[in-house]
Image 1 (cartoon, rainbow, N blue to C red):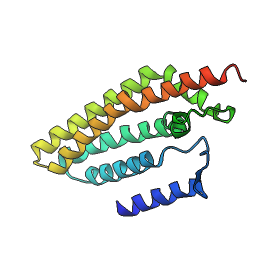
Image 2: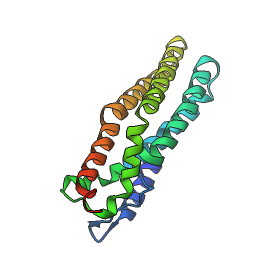
Image 3: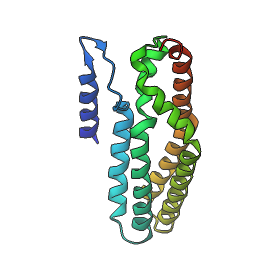
Amino acid sequence: MVRSLIAAMAAGAAVCCGGAVQAQPAHQIPQSLAVEHHETIERLQALSKRPGAVGAAARRSLTLFRRHVEREEAFIMPPLTLLPALADGKASPDMAWALAMCDRVKAEQGEIFQEHTDITTAANALWSAGMAAHDREAMDFARGAVADSLNDLEIEEPAVLMIGAYLHAKLDGAR
């Protein structure tokens, strides 16, 4: 975990130059979220190696989580890298790359919600399996996975929708 955190901080530092933050390429996601994804996959991989219901539930969760991470990293999270600049009131034409991603989040809200429902269902199954096996680590992971899924629905995805609306308002007339 410390090694992952150090690697993420180093990658984040590569984005900075001389104290000024440089614009991140469109394919990057916020480093804190990259670290979180990496650690979640590592924990699920470890849980998936356990015998019985805990391992089976973790393998199901791992499959769903990997699919969701691909979606998030492809088009949900990259626009979040613009938040610091937008919070400073800076919107520029070089941010237009995010519009298609934000619009896609809006268009796929139903699918994204279903994906979160499936992840929550799988996490609940992992929690139940952990409870039956007296596996505190599985139960704790499952609880955190549900909280993370709620965070995506309540904060991250609405933030992307707001970024899209803001950029459309600022840039549509300028293009």
